[in-house]
Amino acid sequence: MPAGPIATCAKRVAPAVRGCKNQPKRRSSRRTRSTPARWSCRCHARGEGGASSPTAAKISRSDARLATTPAGAMGYSALAVGNHDLERADELANFSKEARAPLVSTNLCRQFEAVRCSRVARAHGVAVGLVGYTDATAVGPLATWSKNMDPCDAAGPLGDAVLAEAASLRRRADVVIAIGHCGYRFDADLFRRAAAERARRGRTVDAVVGGHTHLIRSSNGRDYGEAPVVAQAGVSGSHLGILELDLAARDPSTGLEVAAARSRNVPLRVKDNRGSDMQRFVDAELKAHAAPPAKPWRTVLDRGDDGACRERECAVANLVADAMARKGACASGASRAPVVALFEAGSARASIETGPFGRAGATAVLPWANTYEVLRFPSAGALESVIAFGAASRAPAGLGGGFLHASSNARIFLDAAGRARLLVAPYECGRRAAGTRARRLFKGKSPGTLAFLPPASSPSCRWRWERPAGPVDAVVTSWLAAGGDGFGPAIAKANATRRPLDGVDADALEAHLAALPAAATYRAEGRVRDAEDAVAAAAEFETSCAARPLHATRPHTAPPAIAGVLGAISMTGGFVATYPLSTLQTRAMLGEPLVVESCAWLYRGVGVAAVAVYSSGAVFWTMHAFFSARMGRSFGS
Image 1 (cartoon, rainbow, N blue to C red):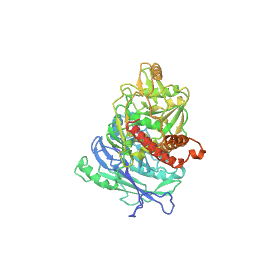
Image 2 (cartoon, helix red, strand yellow):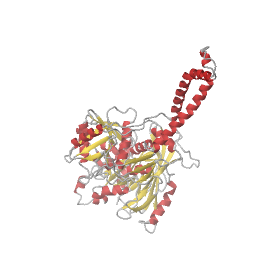
Image 3 (cartoon, one colour):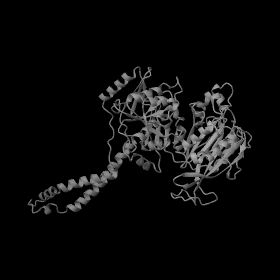
Image 4 (cartoon, rainbow, N blue to C red):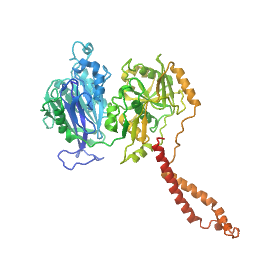
């Protein structure tokens, strides 16, 4: 497992014109139809069937290595679902979690929580959409649900669904590759239909990586030309399939297009294609496609475990929720309504391990490339009904995918009666330059640290909490906003309106980590709490926090350069204003008569002295502000 093809785009999308030795490092901002720039995107497919059961294959998104090992050592951008996988459908969620990769299938995504319709992977600025499909009619007599599934007919409802999903991916993806398990005929017919309907639908599927028929199909390294761009890589790890696409930026208004495609299959002639021999062979084969390792965003000192996120508040989900809140509350044009972020546990798919943490780690935790949306609820009660709906699915009573975690400016109280109560405080965005300053501070040095600490023993008030009296904005994932995890009816009943945000989840997490102190920590801190009576517990907490002194926060200060100028001007102004008194004092000390002959006499020599005072004041206040800021960041204030 999985029996379906496993595909990804290697983390190397090199701006290269084939045949040219001197390759430009970056694409030019100006493109013409006569001189298109090209990229090579190599996609790897492992043949149908596993080397063992369960089995897995890995492409690390940071170095594009592929290896075939037992489950748990995976890192693919997407996994197709095979018909034999459905014989153990109850294990799909566990398999996806262990694989740290999403299962994609357009006709199964509404049948199983662990399966998504599609996803978008990113490689060096190129967004690659991956849409899946499965022959769900070849499961066996025990799976009665499969009798209602559409057959593998590219001209029928399944083909409609795949092309519609591919068309929707075009809003976020430069290239769309279909990875499926319906057989070679379906794959070829699907590609032909996509080409024939391009005038009506626009660009949809650019290439197909297929399976199910155990065939070995490629162009043997030659351009496909007018033939369907379909690749299949055999069965049971018999071959390594490499699909290569040349992407041309012909017109800035249409983005990247596939200018040419080719594929090849490399036989895996090794002693044991289940073991280390195969790993070494595949690693050597793909070494040429590896990209240089990306600079990490942070160094993780203590591991963040996502194991408990479906049952209770966890630090990993808190980090993601805060990144969502920063995206929604701190963006330009943000509304004046209270803003909180709610993150469903099912969208976190991996723990955050110790060591360097960057794009590869972020996409392991958030493999779906979700965008974010702001849902405006007319009242706190309407939002609380949605929160209570998600809490009802909490593990172990349910699967827990819809259990909602909150940003740091929200406190949620839940009780056994199915009620939820929400308290909100303003979200502290900090200064707009915080992220830029942190990046400048970390440039060429340590990227800063991130530690996940044990849960707090007692909750902290920190702010004044209150239940909003008017509309409330909630930042959520596009998956939840579209009704994922069964939230559709609850959101519709709450009369929430939607407003999309730009960017994807990993980008928001990067921006949030850059804005944190150099030594950042996260923990479960009582954002989501169980109580006998949610309403009473929330009221008690609100009252107790109102009576306590708030934690002192470091006041906002000007940047060192500005602080130096302002301090120097202040010192110089004071010096000039009091200079006549200094003149008279000096004459008195020397025993001279204190007769004021003119105002000019009182200010004799003030220019040179003022310059000296200004210079010394600028140096003093600049250094004072600089070291104060550094000490504040060092202690996490």
